[in-house]
Length: 357
Image (cartoon, rainbow, N blue to C red; front, side, top):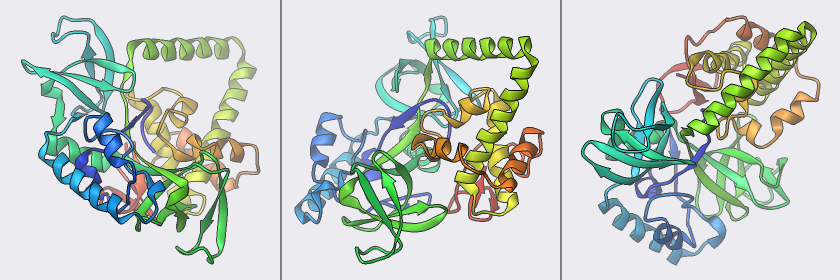
């Protein structure tokens, strides 16, 4: 889940070391971890590579690498702002603005001097004032709260099972590149995942495990999006019928997302998901359209793996439609919340099995 600024794949040494991330315990082996860390300067990118199976030597090697990594200063940096901070071409307030790093977005430190940090966040590279950034333990703590651990299926078809054994009932199938949120990495063989808001299990050897943190945006990307939004607005104003159709499409799209994220929850849980999307649209920190928010890179897993698109073309339950309509009309039971996740250690408004903040 979460924000429309791209996806930043990051898993620092502090994160590897079997820590808790919002209630998620990471205990996975990684056959090629040392290569990852050596090539990426310790602490950045996809760290867990479950292809090593039950290799005890790999686990011991991972623990040793983690211990060494923890002695190094973290390369992680996170935005410490309410909306967004300016990223500039040079370490000066007078320098050209090259992009924005939004609230809860992160990046890697490239260089630091005179109260400024040169950072990389996705395609965005530039300088930001240290006054608006978090480093070290503070950055790690925020990343743990807002980041999202997922599995991505690498095989043609992956069985999702009710229990962590190969004889357990198959609850469903994942297509290649489909993604699910991780609840817990059980061991080097099984991973517990969130499947239709219930616990399920997949074999670790067939998936990649990634930790996602939102990225910043370059000014070129921002300008392009704003131009496209303005053009869409002009077209809608020129043709009232098209505007009506666009509204209907937005309702259906939001209803499809609500079904994917809260289809098994109460109506209040469904309304809360819709309210989060509309809060983002109105916030100024996210894309200003429903489709822009839903399909923003790295934000909503069902949008990433194509499930929203599939549900869009099916019969969506009426409760999800009603929730979408109410949310679009300004009704919110979560205040101005712009985030939600499976209930765990994060503080916020608890509705059914999810927490909103």
